[in-house]
Image (tube, rainbow, N blue to C red):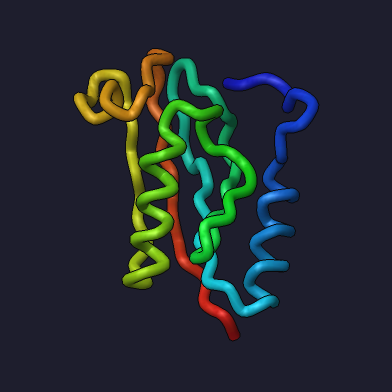
Length: 116
């Protein structure tokens, strides 16, 4: 499991607060949350990333190694409204293609929020 956040890194509360602010301002938003880890994983369960429809990003679910794939899934969720459960594992060919070479497995739940 990952250690404490380093200076400049956003925690789950920061990502959630940004998501709330963007949502209240009328932007579409998706939240990605680490739901499960196994072995060496860059971020602990509960880590969050907020992605807005206008392209803003706050937080992290993988310390950078699978962020691009999660951002794309978040944009897709914003577009179609369907939640997703993503799984990245070192034994999975897609893990290497997105940069998960840490030797672990992470699962990330992605869901879109809609303006009220």
